[in-house]
Image 1 (cartoon, rainbow, N blue to C red):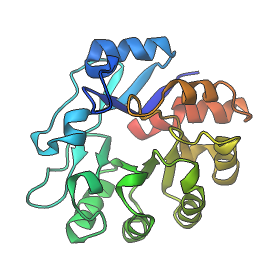
Image 2 (cartoon, rainbow, N blue to C red; image 1 turned 45 degrees about the horizontal axis):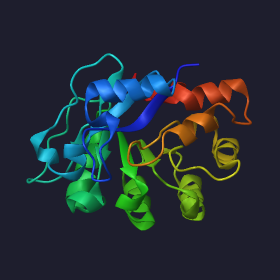
Image 3 (cartoon, rainbow, N blue to C red; image 1 turned 30 degrees about the vertical axis):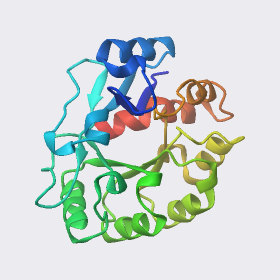
Length: 226
C-alpha cells in the first residue's frame, strides 16, 4: 500500500522547533511513520509571504504545493497539480470576484485546491463550490466539530473531498467513506501543526475494504497528481 500525505508542512512553524524545518528532517519523519511521499506547503508561504513563491526544494518524495492568492496583489496561477488557498490567513474572499476568477482558471487547468476548514466559512465554501462546480476542492483539517456542516457541503457538492488529518472520531473516516465513497477521502496529517502519528495509525486500522483503504492511503492523491 502506497501512503501519500496530501497535507504536510515544511519549514519552521510558530508552534515550536520541529524536525520538518528542513527537507532532511521532514523525510526522516516520513520514514519514521512509513509514509512514502507527501504534498508539501512551505511554512513561509503559509504564514508569511505567498507572493514570494517559496518553493519546496526538489526531492523525489516531495511534491511542492504553492499557496495562491487572487487579485493584482496576489500570485499567478502556478504550474502545479495541487495548490493551497488560505483566505483567512492572507485576507481575501474566496468567493469574491477575484477569488472566483482564480478558481475558474484553476478549474480550467485541472488544478486541485487544498482549503483549510478554519480558513473559510461553510457559506464561503458553498458559494465557491456552487459558482465553480468543476473546481476540485479538498477540505483539510476539518475535525469532529465540523461534521454536520461538512456533511451538508459534501451532500451538496460532489467535487468536494476531505482529508483525514482531523477526522479522529470513532469510525469517522469509515462513515465518510461509506456515505460519500472512498474516492472522496484522502490521507493527510497537517503535520507538524497537527499530529501525524494518529492519522497514520488510524490508516492501518480502518474498518473498510482493502481497496478503499488503498485509495484513501495514496491512490486518490496520486490520481489528483496525474
